[in-house]
Length: 190
Image (cartoon, rainbow, N blue to C red):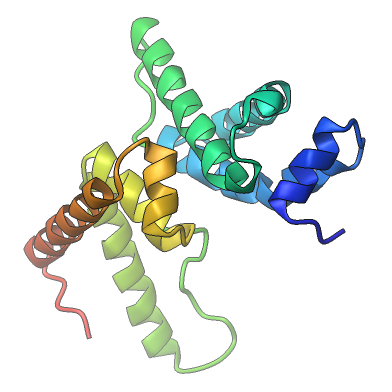
């Protein structure tokens, strides 16, 4: 079914059993990827994603702007990841590093092109991933939301609970820090 988010939310609120499933199918990958990068654990991300969708279903009547379901859901996922990290710290077990890659794509060979070119590309991707992993969490968040999830600045602002100008500033600083790190690592780009 090709409902907009707003239509799916309205139908879910009207007790249409399929409507919330449409939203889950539409956003489960995005929520899982965000949680996996923030927690550094595929297992934790699976568990937390289920919790996020359950909470979203229960909190759906409180959603003020049904058309803004995606940023609302991603903000809930981010908040759940932060709560999870706090709980891990308080129980004296350190959470894994988190957000170690920009995407699930390794950039490796796809059965096309020059193998040497593919190897060089894979090495570049690995270097960028390593540099991103070294960034502070706030920088990793904006980089992930912008370049992996493809969110706009206004949507990132909603997810993070910040103003658009603050998001633009964070993106600018995160890109500068990433560039500096890549330079220190010897990355020259193409």
